Image (tube, rainbow, N blue to C red; front, side, top):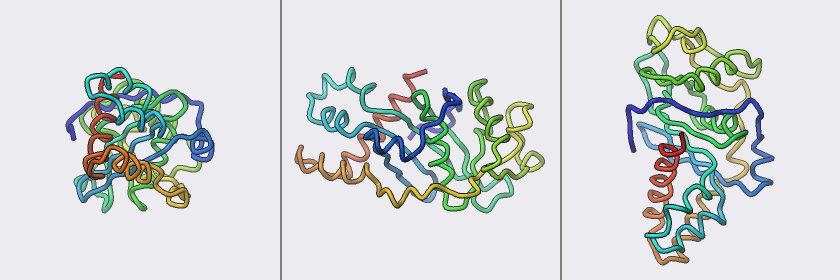
Length: 207
């Protein structure tokens, strides 16, 4: 995982819901440990094709696989018992709000905040919209954890008042990982790590 990255994401105001995304065949996978949470939105058929393709030919296929990617790092220095700081995020048009809602829901009652070191203009727009939403709760952290810019929205941490029940959909990515691993005779753990690694590479090269 790459840390210390600028939070730079294009999030359109149009929002695709989790119901819409899953009905369109978009899968999601959430990877957690005690330090960070990684979340990827992707197209299962394209991902399976990617893993079945010769490694030398995969670079051109990457953009067909991924829809969204987000890394958040646990932050215990802002006065929050369960605070998470966005370190890298990117999403195709319409999927950004869903990516952030899934991220807030994946913290299990925790709070989501912007990168504390650097935030792009586009990301500021996202947090400004978050600040205005009635279905999103926010708590002031500015005196304990100063943001990198002066915008008011960056002085707060956020969480959904009613988190998405994403677990009822099942981790669609996990079943795909198992299927792909079986098809290519590989370790499921390797397939998962490769999927996450390629998603981050896609995010870094999509700006």
